[in-house]
Length: 196
Image (tube, rainbow, N blue to C red; front, side):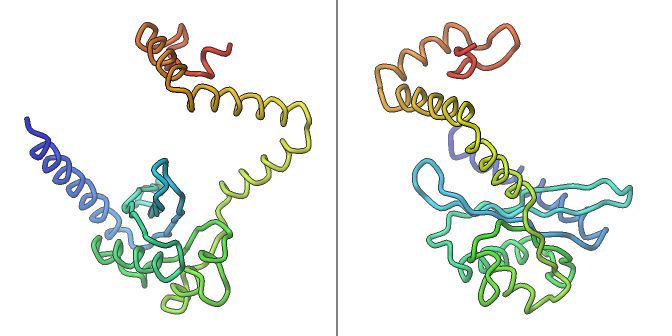
């Protein structure tokens, strides 16, 4: 099968999954938008948009429904991406009851942040700070307070740089992975597995 046909098949499958998710969501009404931006390995800005919702059996769902390469991470560009996702999925902003973002000014700024712009149109879309992001910040601050943890993470980071930025060492690690695809616990062989 050619690469073009595989890509078309993947697009059709992903659209069918997205339609199924949106169909289920529309029966149950309300949802929350969760979104975050980050820079990928190729130094491009990625913007991920997820929807959280609860079905009729009170089971909560979190579905990623949009992944955008964005040119800028200002609020105007990010709001446009969210509106595009809502338009493509047929979701109404009037059914949005929550917004969950990190605490950056472009997302939660009181004058022109993403949350502020969306709340101007739908006041019931309440902003909630991302607890996962808060937990990450809290753990980071806690680890910095412990010299042992800080030193251990610094050593691990330096070892990963030593291997990642050396083609010769990276090739040696790849050879080890081919010879031993998993360890005795079923974990993929990598730097962390080899360090036990």
